[in-house]
Length: 424
Ligand code: 3BY
Ligand code: FES
Ligand code: FE
Image (cartoon, rainbow, N blue to C red; front, side):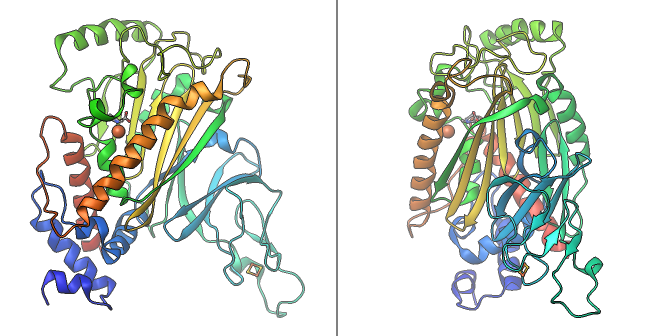
């Protein structure tokens, strides 16, 4: 069977799909877009789920979404419902959101508050650490509660960001180093004293990699993002070789002020192909935050921040998050795959917890730029998917100056999948 037949075989096994994927990744040119199957084939999608989304650290949400004991959030990682809950000691725990009795989902809301975790089906009851407390009186006499707790997932948080990993083991490599830096760079924000102001959930008919690829370059920005470009500088980071002297002068002036206030800003990247990256980028001269006119979005600055012109600290976490941390609000983005050609992009805007809606901030003003940008990117991603589905599609070349972020992302993806397939 050749590759094409293999992918189209009705009963392609997951093992065969992995072999086919490893082969495609091995043979690909790293500065070309991927073979269509990697963007649209359901068998390949299963491999992405098994080798990336069920094995790697994923961003799920912020600690200030679940500030108190019993607060929880849920997230669907492909077909895996996951529950993230704060316990009495303030620790954040992640569990598979599936009951040890007959598997029902336990927490049914996207965010909520509970005393214990009670399954809605037959009311098996678990504490916030996943121990089964109560299973009615109907079970056999030899039934041992201790043997039927919830299955946990790995969970780590730093700087207010919560990450989970569904793997049997959690990859360590440079992740802890990234978390330490994240903690230090987020310190000025005092995330525990922020609140979720707005959340948007966008369904996109595009493979998750197309969503990420789109985010990793600004080649498309000038033609598509007028609102964003009122404030955003198109350079990828402070070392971007394309940036002119004018940018370097602007960065030098801004960063001198940031240094004076002890605001971390220097570019840090982790992993050989920037799996994680943190950098504070100035916004356009004379603008404060990512609003339509660049003026303030909230009267209450975050944490210990005094300078409204703090640019945007861009935090990248492959495979599923990019973020913009500014002076009076921050925005986090999460991508989750649904199927080979469907993804969900969740965007959340946070402000100071004491900022009053309608007084200190206008939610419509706060969300406008990124609502517009997300919508524009969704259209681009969906068109990209449609064209890739054509028999006329062939992988095409990336610009090494404008699309190096895409090249880095796909190198990370390719290395990770190949490494994880081999690790079996
Ligand atoms: O602003 C972002 O998150 C990315 C980086 C440049 C293009 N894109 C919109
Ligand atoms: Fe949860 Fe029965 S499935 S109690
Ligand atoms: Fe975009």
